[in-house]
Length: 406
Image 1 (cartoon, rainbow, N blue to C red):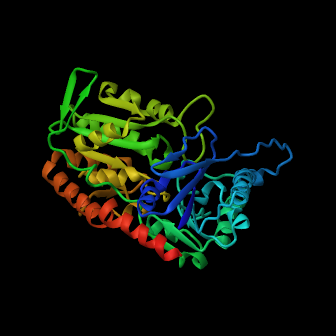
Image 2: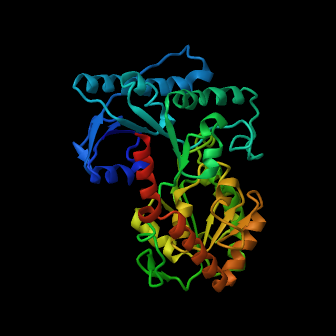
């Protein structure tokens, strides 16, 4: 087959699927919004396109998001027309629709099968919007903007033949009329690469060597922000560090924003919530690592005594499942995405998202009971091996799904 991938940050969620299709003998291409490209990646032919610029002061504020997605769709549409004139016609298009690039792909190749990655469908109630009372949606017009934000997904659903979602809960956020077209298969966790290692050690500041015998608390996000519970985590630290004088906290994440609103001008969410509690903390034991290489991230999970994860009702992070694969003892928020993979007392501990005291108590419980932490961690890893392993479970199911589309 000729298979075309569309993702604004290719390979993204298709990192393993695209090369696997190449290995099966398919002709695989990816369209990406860049012009400074190598000729290919892992056997995937790369073709770049430009996004048209615009600066319309009269655009209705509710339409700014949709206009941005339309512009990205226009850029890909024009490049796709060039490819069609050159004789290229895909049998199957696999697209992440979140940024709008694939809006008009069926208008270029109407006979192609289109399958979309169903990451999240926004909801005015029951999801991330309005979940956190600390950041209320005071503007009644927010629901109107959200409805238009979903217009991109609805237009894709009208054109798509099928969908792929990484978790059951994420699939459940999509409208019922399209849900029956969604196959639930996770992107997959490399459980061989992310595995427990009892001999692992970590050297801090070129002088302090840490091992699994030390009390290490880890917290990982792409960016440190309320959507992933950074504010709740920071408020739990004074009690944790006071009770465990030798414990150290390692925090991974950038200072930008991945989801939700930005921090007030001139500050960052990291600094705001650090300032809130810093007078109660021994900051020499709180280590902000920023963004780190993947191998360092894996080693950090391997050395972790307790890994903490929180999220609004939103997209489930790969980092949680990688922590499970590493055999971490996990304390996580009892929110719907998390509850799909963690059961309280069986393969982790859960606590109410907003209860920082409960978070502190559960972390301290695991710091004091290493055997319980090991039991929970091994149970978490067993689930990843059995149901989410990249090579034995997820990738074969993804490949079978692709074959079923044509």
